[in-house]
Image 1 (tube, rainbow, N blue to C red):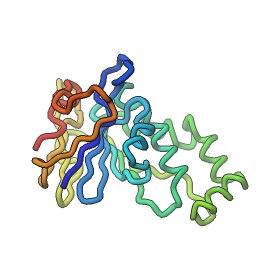
Image 2: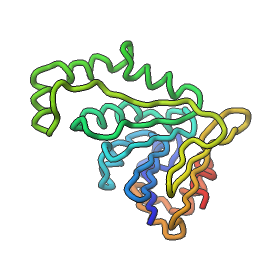
Image 3: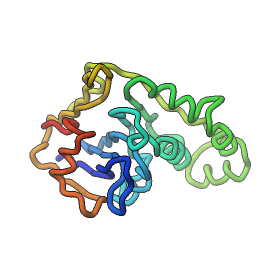
Image 4: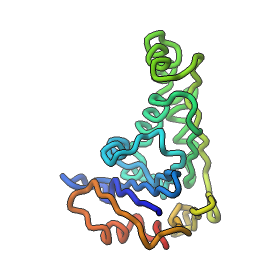
Length: 208
């Protein structure tokens, strides 16, 4: 049975109950994340999921309310790993690769952080206590800019992209399995599920 976790279905305007976009689809033990808006990592943990469970991240487009928590998610997923998790695969329109490099690359904004955690004795001890084995590898992210067409295809879930007003964006995920029995789990307390699925930034993302 497929499950959908609505972490955020708001807009760029912050409110007490809604802010930004982020969703998780779980199918047969695979967790696919769509967008990574404000506090998405924190909201992920609030619904009982840990960042290391997520192996795929898809960006619909690169506005801050859809990707501002991307650095936090990548760093947290890597920092809390034991080195045996799957490599994270990230797909999105143009700039996905560039943004990823600007976060974690050799000249990226957070290179000082992950290099310290790789090399500092105290960080190495924490890593070993967690179950990791030295030497610790730097974060590896398989990021890819994608255009219209099939982006990811699994046994029970496929994700495709289509152009929107001349720009490439990920706009649809098609569940082939138990979609009629989706379970919606809300972290936005006042959010109705039909409003979330009809949110203009997410239109067509969950076609079933």
